[in-house]
Image 1: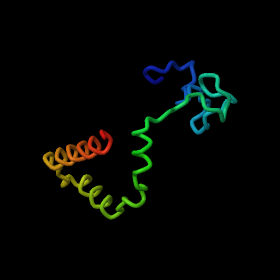
Image 2: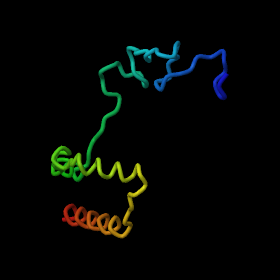
Image 3: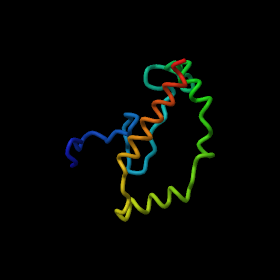
Image 4: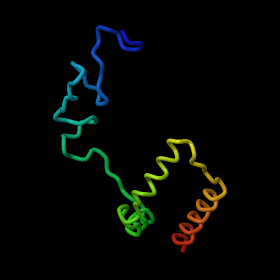
Length: 106
C-alpha cells in the first residue's frame, strides 16, 4: 500500500478519473469540468490592448532559437560549470522593463 492512497481505492489520473491499470490511458468524458461540453470554451479570455500589442510585436520564437547555444548551456549546467552573472541578469531585466514602460506609457 502507498502512503496516502488506500489499497481499496483506485489511483486517480490528473483529470481525477479512476485509473484501472498501470498502462491505462485516462478516460475521456463527453463533458469537461465545469459542465462545458467537450470542444466548447468554458472560460473567456480577453487580452488588454498592451498585451495584444506585445504579442503582435514579438518575433516568432523560431527566429530567436539557437540550438547550439542551448546545447552548450545544457552541458555546462549538467557538468556544473555554468555560472550566473547576477549583475548582467539584473541589468537586462531593468533594461527590458524600461523599454516596455517607455513603449507602452505614451
